[in-house]
Image 1 (cartoon, rainbow, N blue to C red):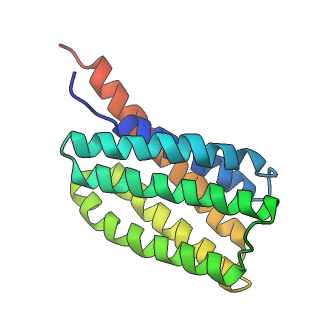
Image 2 (cartoon, rainbow, N blue to C red):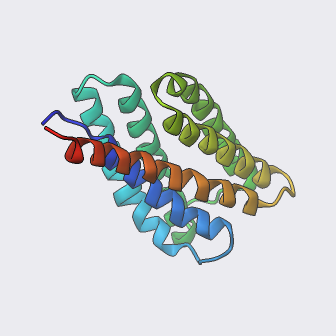
Length: 172
C-alpha cells in the first residue's frame, strides 16, 4: 500500500473546522475546539503534512503542515485568552485570518488541477477565512463565515472519504 496521508489530513481538517464553524454560527460554546485544535486539527494534520512530504507530494505537504500549524496557533490563542497570558485584539485576529485567506487563495490555484472537489474545499476555505477576517475588522456577521465553514468541512470529509473508499473498495 502506498503512503497516502491525505485522508487523515482532510478528516482532521474537516472535523476541527466543523466544530469551530458550529461555534461561529453560535450553536455551541466552542471549548472543545481548543482540544481539537491542538491534537486533531493541529498535530494529526501537521503529521499528515510531514508524511506527504515523505511521499513526495509538495502540495499536500505544504497544505497539511501549514493548516496543522494554523490549528496549533489557534489553540494557543484560545488557551492564552483563558489563561490571560496574551491579549489578542479583533484587528490582530482579523489580520491573521486575512493573511491565511491570502495563503489559501494561492493554494486554491494548483488545487484546480488536482480535482474539482478538492478545489471546492480550498475555495470555501478561502471564503471562510476572508469572511471571518472581515467580521473581526468590521461589523460583518461572523455567522456567514461559520456557514461557509460548515460547507467546507463537509467537502473535506467528502474528499477524505473518497480517497479511503477508492483505495479500499476498488477491484483488485
